[in-house]
Image 1: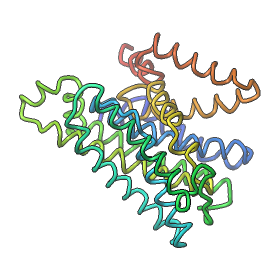
Image 2: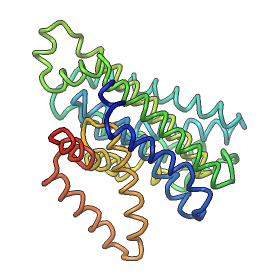
Image 3: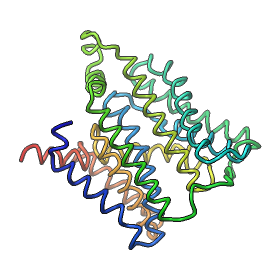
Image 4: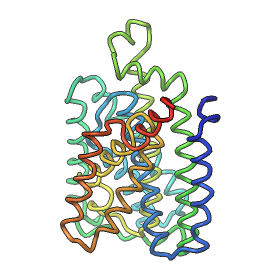
Amino acid sequence: MSNFFNSRLFFISIALVVIAATLPLYVSGYVLGLLTVAFYFGVFAMAWDLLFGFAGEVNFGPTFLIGVGAYTAGILNAQFGWSVYLCIVLGALASVIAGLVLALPALRVRGPYFGLTTLVAVLMLQNFIVVFADLTGGEIGLTIPDVISINAGTNYWIALGFMTISAAILYGLSQSPIGLVLQASGQDPVQAGALGFNIVKHKLAAFIVSAFFSGLSGALLVFYFGTASVGTVVDVAVGVNVIVAAVLGGRRTVLGAALGAIFLIVAGEFLRPTGELATFIVSAVALLVVLFFPGGFLGAALSREARS
């Protein structure tokens, strides 16, 4: 961690946050809204990177944790009229509980079976939302009566502050002794276990932390949208975007995952006039980065800095 605080990356990160904090003073509400969504997706990607990049567990269903937090918060507000902030906290707590229930059996399987377990969990959540449409709004979506704020600048600052704090916590955790154990267990679980580390316990802790930030960000996002639907927080395509963002930004960098998410959201929006071609262009860029820069945007920059 001391090396990070003395690195150019730290000062660049601080400068970018300061510049980003001033954007509401001179950019349009449209741009602020776009970046607000990108910041929440940045937290999704960082939480996913903690589990995959360090623990080595491929979670194909990040939207299960996101969706549980989002729908729990939205339903409590829509059905019972509870305050926004209480619903957000309870949404994050519901994601932690759901993550714990999912992780206990999933972490006991090896290879691709963990990823398949998490993917099945997403499909089950989608079916639950459709079957219990009276509660969840079904395929139409759940309308939420309250929002955090109707001011674009306020929503933007909340999202930026949340992403910044989440990045600091997740990056700090990744560089802590727990993060080093996770990295060792992800690279060689047999050897890490032979050294006396409880691999399952550390991976379970990583899954719970990932669930907390995913659920909290999902709950905040739906109170920004004012609605919750399968297409925005649960769909498999949303999960694919989260995974691609983390890989684009750089595996095991945490901070790079946020960079990748912002790139995906902003690039997709600016390419919207091209229609279906937008998805092709963004996918092609992602493929080129994976093929020629396996470390992602930030990973390549860090490697260049280390060599210099």
